[in-house]
Image (cartoon, rainbow, N blue to C red; front, side, top):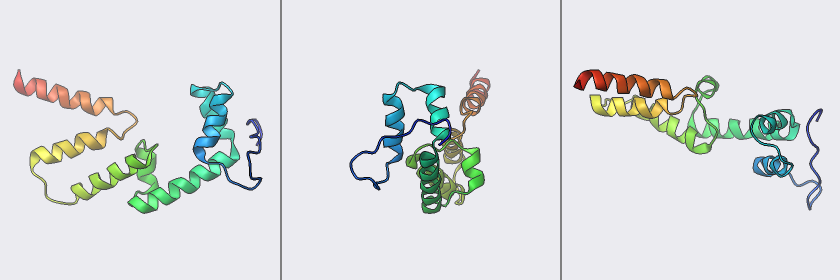
Length: 128
């Protein structure tokens, strides 16, 4: 673990730490924001567990690696939202529902504000 803080052994020697426990450890050491992100990026145990977690959740909800790279999916609920959006996109929706699904899907983008602003600008032009 070059550059990462080493975690003290807690209780059972071989008991794996959860992602949250590892993150909490760094937070307890005063790390936040970018410093926290960098520490977690360098923590091999955290990265291994994160990769395994993503694989499990990706398989559970049928999300591709490409979609995972396109959308911001930090929580399991985000994968579930994307799965439901994909399910709704595969059926015939009326125009209103289709637009609602597009807005929901846009919320999963890292740059989610741009699609909202575009939709608001469209509505302002439509009603002004």
